[in-house]
Length: 138
Figure 1 (cartoon, helix red, strand yellow):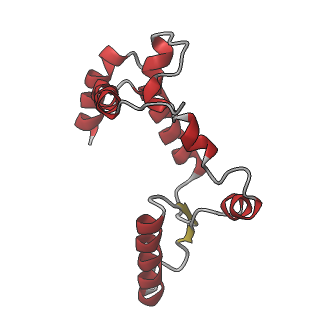
Figure 2 (cartoon, rainbow, N blue to C red):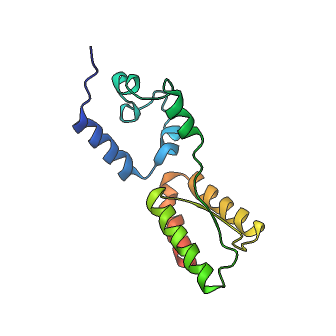
Figure 3 (tube, rainbow, N blue to C red):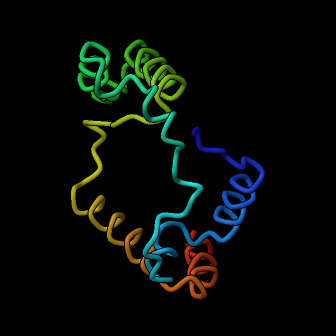
């Protein structure tokens, strides 16, 4: 018997999850031990999926690499146009990309990552004040 998906309930759950701004950390903090239904797919969707049974399709997906954009030469107007075009293509087709040779020191990037991690580890009730403090620094 096929599983019945209540799309209205799923939409409500997803909306509540999004509006909570707690993210997955909220589940951890709430000590949730069972995966919420909004993250589950009906078995027939998984059975009809081409993975992992279709080896050719599986290998195509496994060999994909997201775009890496080299910023060296950005000072040259022709190279800059090429880089901007590459960024546009990557953003449209992938939604993200990796920048290399950007000149940002490793220490600065580590500091940014540390700040992001600290923010996300704050208790939910402290985040709005933390967000306001970050915005005031700008």
